Image (cartoon, rainbow, N blue to C red; front, side, top):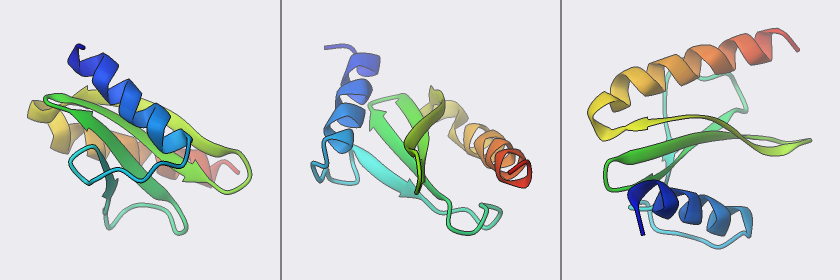
Length: 88
């Protein structure tokens, strides 16, 4: 199974409410995240899929990236989430 397929498999498992170790699904902590917003990362080797939890609609995939660009990817996602929540 490729890395992307593996990360998607972890995402599916999480959607089915299976608890996975932080090596597969991780909560991302960031000081600029909007209040009540939980950002998660599904990962397999170098591949990352970022998604967040919204109470009324559930989890929404935001974007993906690689381990090598993780810091920039997370900053970009946090900016998108701030725009999303500011527009509500």
